[in-house]
Image (cartoon, rainbow, N blue to C red; front, top):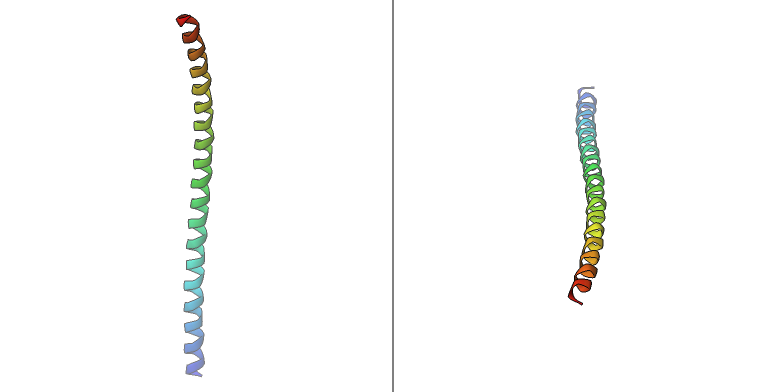
Length: 69
């Protein structure tokens, strides 16, 4: 009977460790997903800024060409 108890205790310990590892992995994946979302939002904002600067450069170029005529 003692051997069965030891085996059961070992199985419980293994299961507990596996559960903790699974939870830690889940938290890490959640943090990574949040970071990816934030990075995507920043990339969208940078894209908008680049488009605005491009438009501004085109206007400046047009004005400069008119001034040089």
